[in-house]
Picture: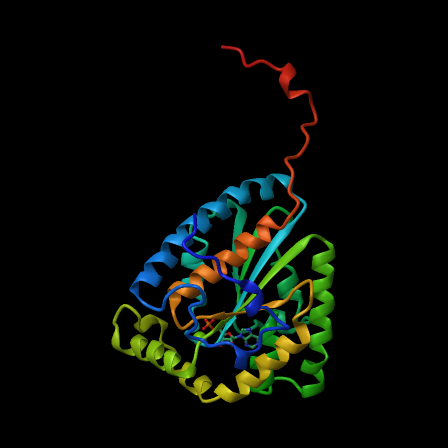
Length: 275
Ligand code: AMP
Ligand code: MG
């Protein structure tokens, strides 16, 4: 049994938008240590449900699930993957991180590297960043002309439609933190020796583009938050709430599928296992 149930609809586009959602929201949980404990216990319950459902999802083999994570620097993508998916069978999960494109990748269309990484049927794919960088960092840093990145919204919608029609279901997550929370987390990367490795001086430059990213994200949500693949804007200042929201969304996506156990091709019961 869960202590509380997160109402995902309030965080889903088109209802949700960045101004309407408080990054510090804790939904049905009290914003204190009791709420935190309850949410952490609920993540445990949800992860067990996820793993249970994953067995049949794999056996059924008609659907794929793509959990796509976008956030500003220090938004918590790595921690979300570590904590909200911690009980899944690793054999059925593949995490892909999208960094600066290589020379080979840049010599292709922007979806080339992404299409190769999408999960096959029966598997759960996790994208740590994604094709959305091609209308985010690419837009803000002016890496290609505007008419090139503008055309990509339609390409992305068509691409996700193609995947949907082939059986892929989407959980597209934006981890929503505020400026103060980002400052705290970046400062921790400077102060804490075990986090120094995560520090990237470039993150401080990107922090200066806060408003430009906000605008770029708002347009992403407006143009690519479709019925088949809506965005989920997850309040992420509090990690424990972020985790329970993402775990709920993944469980919901798996439980919404009309899964069945495959029919055996032989009459299994006609066999006996000899001593
Ligand atoms: P990190 O996730 O912090 O390890 O950094 C990965 C970096 O790769 C980020 O600065 C992203 O903005 C950058 N990146 C990811 N995809 C693209 C892309 N398609 N074009 C340009 N930069 C990208
Ligand atoms: Mg970075």
